Amino acid sequence: MARESRRSASLAQPTDINALIDRLTELATDGRRFPIGGRIMIDEQDFFDTLDQIRLALPTEIQQARRVVQDRQKVILEAQAEAERIVSVAREKANYMMSDRGLMAEAKARGDDHIRQSREQMRRSMSEFEAYALKVLERLETTLRTELDDIEQVKELIRQPRARLDP
Image (cartoon, rainbow, N blue to C red; front, side):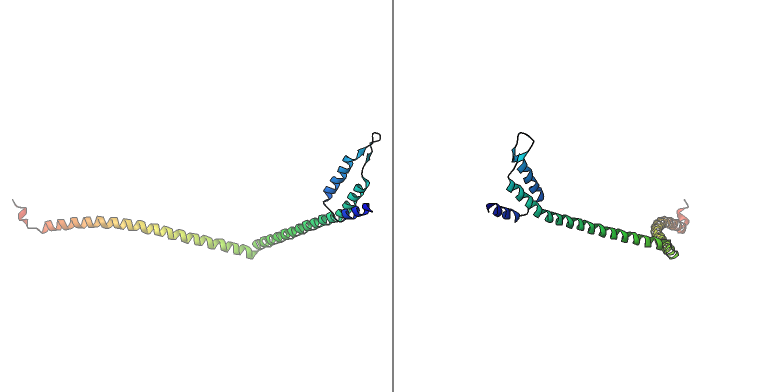
């Protein structure tokens, strides 16, 4: 009767399968050895209790392993579906790009980009040209003003009476 109560108590608690296998190893290691024949005597009740616990723990371990495998398969299937979707989108884009409409659209987009870049370059060049032209005109203006001043001085000299010229 004590055997049965111990057995039912041990059956109520399934534990980690590795711990139970370690317990069997411990039973074998701690068992009494016979000098001849390489045999070991172990506590029969402990041995059968541990086996019963392994039987209880195995379905749980197997269920967990199945769940892990199912989850893994689900992730793999989702990844494969995503990869197929990506490949499909890439194929569609490649087909579109290779079609007449796709080539025309791509050529137009590139042409528009070149026109935009050319206009921008022209604006920058015009701004640089205008700045240069303004500097040149300002220098010309300064030079002309100096020359006009010189011309005015010569004209003033010509207008002065000749008396100054006679000794």
